[in-house]
Image (cartoon, rainbow, N blue to C red):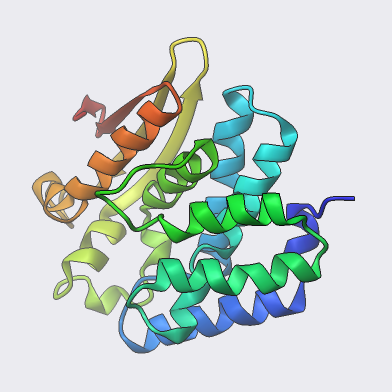
Length: 220
């Protein structure tokens, strides 16, 4: 029987890797990349494929990809996407996943920071969108850093972040509410423009159009 996301969430090794990766990112001042982010990306990626009519098996694979996609940060920020893919292999094999599915998960994880390369399939595409869509003040570790760090400021200003899929219209829409007293909308684009570009590319791989709304105004 193929492992599921619920089985993975109870795996001790996976949990230790996520804890260790997030602890390292905390020491270098990065936003939260722990269990909240892992679960959020897993749930969102699963939702994307299910809403678009993909099989449950693919939805489970993308959820597991989302849960493990940042564990490589335990070895450092550089090339963490590829390191995450390598580390995920031992976890998935231990859980009994067959090699074909393991390769799909590794491939999706391994390119989730690649903004210029090709997207190898729907699992990778859904993971990319789910990861980039997680913009919210709950990711900011210390509000005291908001004034000095643009990444913290933009995340802290995002009071609402909702991703919706319309399978009939073939659209994937990210709707943000940004408190402009904390950060101007232009700051969002300063640091997230490249992320929105990859979301558009990933949406096309799912035969969809990516849309972005900020404060009820369409931006993309």
